[in-house]
Length: 502
Image 1 (cartoon, one colour):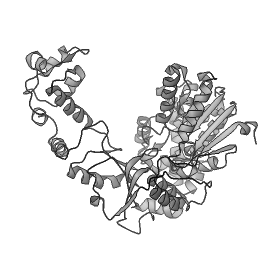
Image 2: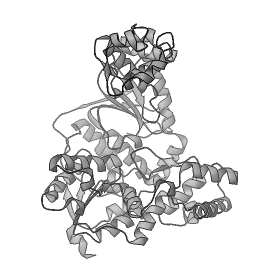
Image 3: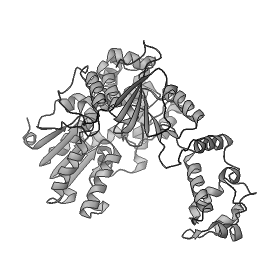
Image 4: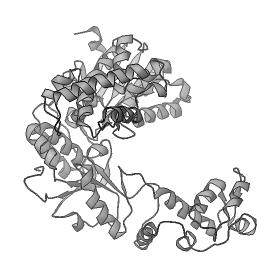
């Protein structure tokens, strides 16, 4: 046991119990008496780190420069190692190397929030990255047989050596190299207090980095929940969280989960073999639980919804249903190409009501109009800092129509126009955030909604994983169910032989 264990506090909390809020409250106390650059707040997600920073800025009148260490671990390593963007291995580099080797290589972040979590269609690259994250050799990772494609050990080792040679030739490092080099170089700042959020999602190499930080720190707070450790497939090391030593601060009251959802979640979580025991209470509201045979059976005409499936491809059929019904939805894993169109429609309708609009709004509107409706050469004469009424635009700025949007926007895709008109007929409002969000359970980590729809179907590969590693799937569906604030809607499986049993 090292000496810092006496000053290490582990904030352990089930869903909705306020782990991050607890950290933020402790951070507020520290900021009253500690220089802000002596406090480190590190989170698994960039969003969480920035929210903590923004809270401190607002409450204590700090600038962004006053809080240099509110970031992800990867961001800290990047900064302390003095790296530039061009030093980091990007997808274009993997593709370039793949072309030279006649092998498909692609690599990108899982999403914009989970820095360092990777996604790849190459099992060879997946094996290599997992071995690095877990601090084992590629051969050891290969022998775990977690890959789904036919990969030979010989091809794996050749690719591993080629990647290392490529990085050396072009002076590049990858995201995991950053973490390893941070520890080797011993470049951690000396903090008075360190906060580490969502710690159950850290990989083995990230735990090494975290230890190198708190070994130079007077006081450390670590928040997480092993039951919500759902990124083992991407290298997360939940065992390191479970075995952490220190003072336990157990949070027991959930402010999100209603009673019926708590009952379902408790049944799921007790199936997890490797876990820390916890007792927690739901909120006083009873909540609602409904079962369906098909997604089409759910009435989603009102309210906010989070629709969760095990894999991305399962979202396609759900998307088709919502599209045909004219409901306002967004697939989290698809770029919202229509958002610019939504914004243009909103701005146009406001302008027709008499509200002045600026050059940026006018340019967006004009992009959906043909020369029959807007003389686009006039756009270059607009003052970026000025606002224009629709009368001004008609009289001297090239606008030739004030028709309703679906007549004026004659360059908008017809299919999109039909969909949006169906939406409007259904009373849907074109807001920045869609009323219905489609996501995988992994993609919804940290989210919540009044209504949650949970599909219980599994793919062939995820069914195999369920059989091999039941803890993984139990944790995952536990997370899915506990995104619910009011009403959990469970869709029964189409194939009972490929399904999660609730």
